[in-house]
Every structure is written in structure tokens, then in C-alpha cells.
Length: 183
Image 1 (cartoon, rainbow, N blue to C red):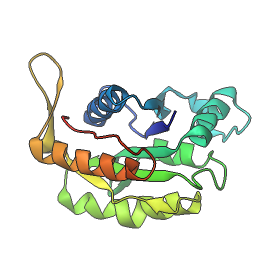
Image 2: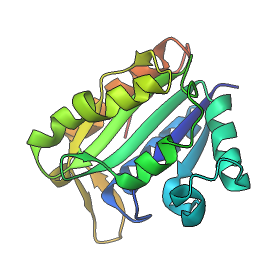
Image 3: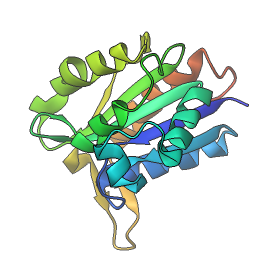
């Protein structure tokens, strides 16, 4: 079974980014793909801050990365860069941990000026980790994601289309026969 791992660099489990990722997970699972999520905010802070490579939780997360065929690296944008919590975890992934994996960067931010962060800040770090197949990143503006009166995530049609395209591109060579739609 093909495996997709989502690495969430959100420091908050109830963020807009988390809502987008939950929609992606549901859709991928409906297509019978194995999906695991690494929510960095749930990893032990001491292990992250003190770079404890021998931590069981860090080793378990890294094992998910190692077993993945495709990885979605998702982050909110703070001060024109990816989140610090994402960086702390990326520092604990083995040097070539993204080698032979298809990578899709995904970011959410409050300004379209932040779009360049994907190209100039995140992609170089992913390359250092061995990523050679990095798909075009997806930038989501804060205004494209909201919560309805029931607390459910609502994604604007424009971003739903971009998510579908990005996910389809991510899996096109790895997961033949899958058609992802209807976010």
C-alpha cells in the first residue's frame, strides 16, 4: 500500500492549516491511500528543543517519514518564514530522509507576499534533506479558509481546485489510478 505522510508545522491543533490538512486526510483515505500525520506540536518539546535523536517519539515519527512514498510538508507562515516548530523537527530528520520521496510543500499565510517563502525558504531546506522531486507548492491565504457555524472547515473553491491539482500531481507517478477530487 502506498503511504502519504503529512508533516504539520502548526503549533495549534485547531488552526486553519489543521482544518485544511484534515480535509486532505479524509480525501486521501477515501481513495484508499494510507495516510499518517506527524503533528509536531504533539511531539515532546524537550526532545525537539534538545535535538534528541534517540527519543522514541522522534524515532517513530522518522520511521513514518522513511516508510512514506509521498510527503506533504505543511506550515503556517510567521514573519515571512515557515514555523519554528517545523524547523525543529526537520533538524531531526536524517540527512537524506526525503530522498526518493515526492514532496508537496503547503503553506497558509495572511499576505500574498508570503507566497515566495515556499520557493526561497522552505524548498532549499527540503532539498538539503535529499528531496529531489518537490512539487509546486500550494499557498493558501487565510481568507480562503474559515469555520462555519458548526465549527467545520470551509475551503474556498479556488483553493479546493489548487489542492486537487497539487495532490493529483503529487501522486500522479506514485499512485496510478487514483483520482482525488471533491475537497
